[in-house]
Image 1 (cartoon, rainbow, N blue to C red):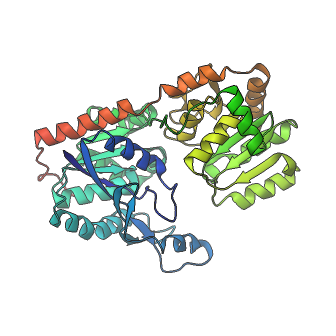
Image 2: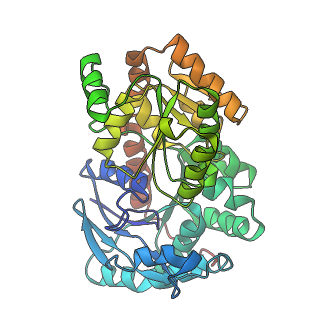
Image 3: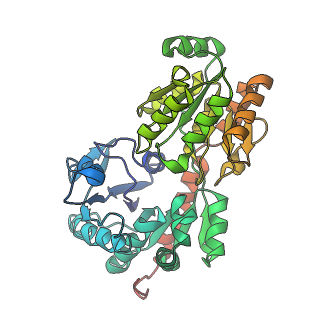
Length: 402
């Protein structure tokens, strides 16, 4: 049995059950192999001021230091963060808070074989510090903004490159991220692309009769599009609203929460489309599946992505996708299941949406494409990486500190 320590601040907790759910989903699929035993250390940022722009830190106060989530031991060491200005020291603070927790796990008998870190900055850099101090092998998964944004910053980029050099293996969820890391000087021999999969027991298509029944239950009519994700600027929900405003027959459901919600609601009012737009807070995965099945199209308007899970989930449910050409979108989206928009504007999105609504797409074909994005290859790829590290008993004691 291979023992891994999953390290990432992107992991669900009792207060935010969908936070980093893509990391938990991959882990749960891995654990199904029954070849790996894992404990999770998911650090949580803390700041003493909880009001004003800092109020989001209050949401984490009630998260316990330990939780059993879906049968997985999850530890939440809290680390001090300086909002806006303290990003440079965040990896150190994160590692400093996590180290006593991890040492205690080892003392209690969980002497793991490898650190499995997710998100390169600050998490992967913090994991590299821990791996050095604990003399443990390290695998880092690049997921999107960590490489597409932070790797371009001078200081963070230097730390990312050092962490990559120290790591024993690197996983990227899209080939575009692999290419970006190589362009930054990371050894391509270390990098393996293991795309996100989709849980076909949760996200799957419905018959026409079942779909119509769901639409009635959810009060969804024809020409309804769906956008899902955190309500942040980079997700481009404002562009989706612009597209809806240009097409008077289109209705939109936005599922998610975030800092841009009030601005988006104001935009809806300004565009006078309130009767055609609905906001829904975060849903369970099963509830989300019902909306995917019921909608005519999923629209993704992001400016940056790694491998967008919402696209994978939508395709698996048989729902075609209109998406901006970001991250790994072009690796999974083809003309038989959606349209990639190169011009990131409301006009371009509206045109693509109208094309699919007018011409139609075979939902069975879309679902067949989506079904190809399974977790089996990703799970086996992880097992191969971990097994190679364990069997080779890699000596990491001579690595340089960050």
